Amino acid sequence: MHTIEHWIAGGAAASTSASAPRTAPVYDPATGREQARVLLAETADVDAAVSAAATAYDSWRDSSLSQRMRVMFAFRELLARHEDELARLVSAQHGKVVSDARGEIVRGREVVEYACGIADALKGGYSDQYSRGVDVLSFREPLGVCAGITPFNFPAMVPLWMHPIAIATGNTFVLKPSERDPSASNLIAQLYADAGLPDGVFNVVHGDRTAVDAILDHPGISAVSFVGSTPVATYVHERATAAGKRVQALGGAKNHAVVLPDADLDYASDQLVAAAYGSAGERCMAISVAVAVGDAAEPLVEVLRRKARAVRVGPGDDPASEMGPLVTRAAQERVEGAVAAAAAQGATVVVDGRDLKVAGHEEGFFTGPTLLDHVTAAMDAYRTEIFGPVLAVVRVDTLDEAIALINANPYGNGTALFTGDGAAARRFQRGVHVGMVGINVPVPVPMAAYSFGGWKDSLIGDSPVHGPEGVRFYTRPKVVTTRWPAGGNPAARGAAFAFPTAN
Ligand code: NAD
Image (tube, rainbow, N blue to C red):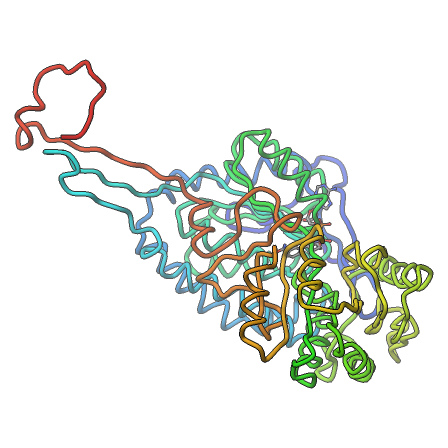
């Protein structure tokens, strides 16, 4: 069986462990079969990656902006050229359909395109003659070795939110991707090498909690970017900040889409089924709650019932499939358990995906689109992130009630409103306590020149990712105050013991 290795100092790297290294299975979720093993790093493997990144930093920090942008342009071209290969790799280990995997690669590539213009984002400030004979300039410097710890659900895009910005701003990087679908990261590492990125600037260590803890505690790492579930985001934030690192930590979600009675129901329901069941609901911006306002409820549930049943579920590499399997058997059991609990707590199971069988793939981790109605805020199906193809309908009477529901939820990642009423839309976008808002847009992932980040339990700490916030996160400001006594203010000569002020 093929073993997926680390990528350190410009090439594949075996385990440093003297005894048999620890490994974990990587499945083909469509068949349920193990397709490879992935190395699980020990602390010594993380040390080796950090050491390679620290060595590379000595020269990469002095690379010119032009050189970094040339590498990013070349990397961007290679990502485009290898889009099909990368999408198939993502699909084969994650389970999502290939067209959906392409979407995540394109959205990740857009971050690289932003990084291609890093010279603009890194322009500093300059004030001539702030005081007489004194000029002030400011610029931002890289931090050093940065690390990324990423989730299984976007094995290409989420790491691409991080490393292009970190590298373009002059840092070096150690990525610890999800052990469930690790191979995309190794292909990305190869593409960076082919783009001319010097060895050691981008490294990959595969692993589990042992690798994560080694990163969080490592004195050679300056900053940690994390995306994953809220409990782990909280843990990462606490432990890494205690170790003196800068941390961005994005967590889980429960995203509501509000449907007003005046909404175009055909449009809204198409958008809702795609946002709830696309990628089998394994998106942090998936819509998992449809909030039906007033008279919208009955017709909405009816049309959702029809469209949920029509979703074509099958293996990710079948072009006819619209939705693939869940990532693991454990994920499937968890999702189906949540549906059973919802029924026991009084929700109506309108469409039950637990019945689904995909011919020829009986051992695959498939759960079909599931629609729950009459869900209340007290039920577990509402309160917890199910992270599967389950859409819960909550019925309310007014838009204000919908906004209050959203604001009482501990998560605040994304939300959407479907309406033709501009005034209602404005009230919604100003009133919700959520970081990313869509108006007739169900999955409002910000474009690359903006930054991605939720509020409340969806983002621990205060730093969103990519765009201007990403540049800020991976750099620190320096301000230089300059006086040239020979050509400046003659009055500045002589020792002045009072605290200096401008004149
Ligand atoms: P996860 O939290 O289980 O794992 C994320 C990363 O942390 C992985 O690399 C994993 O190896 C590591 N990890 C897991 N358990 C750990 C532990 N106990 N200690 C230390 N490290 C640990 O998340 P997942 O299941 O891979 O991904 C799904 C979750 O990610 C969902 O909650 C989803 O909402 C969230 N997510 C959030 C965003 C966002 O932008 N807010 C984006 C994508 C995914």
